[in-house]
Image 1 (cartoon, helix red, strand yellow):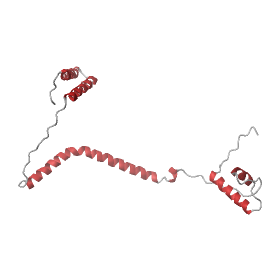
Image 2 (cartoon, rainbow, N blue to C red):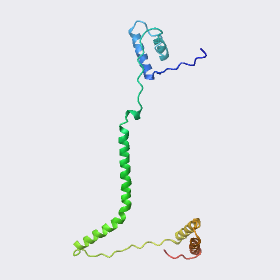
Image 3 (cartoon, rainbow, N blue to C red):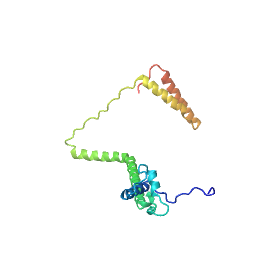
Image 4 (cartoon, helix red, strand yellow):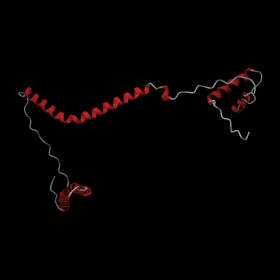
Length: 185
């Protein structure tokens, strides 16, 4: 007995099956004249229902269920195709938006020329007024110049010419930061 390991069930019964069997056994005991030994605990009812030689035959083991992927194997190609189609649509739609601004300018120019020709007698040309921007305060300008100087310091020049150009730009930025008045931008 010590050489043998513990016995493992090849088809372990599910909890639902055990409960259903217990209810079935209790119903059989209620129909018969012999009362169940201890109907209050399920373990005692299970022990009472187990008989060595005879009695009811346990139901056959349930057939193993197929996995979700195998059960719906016809869905996967469809899902992949739809996913590819949506990805392609989004890819080309964003690509189209990137290209459109150049085409949009030419299209708007041609449309405005066509409108001017058709409605030239009734439309009076209005002057284009560009709104002047508010001047940037000196404090913000100094902070901006300091930030630009920090970024110029981080840049790694590739050759001597680029290093010279960056040094000149840094010198100009230092002059702006040190000066009392800053030119308006």
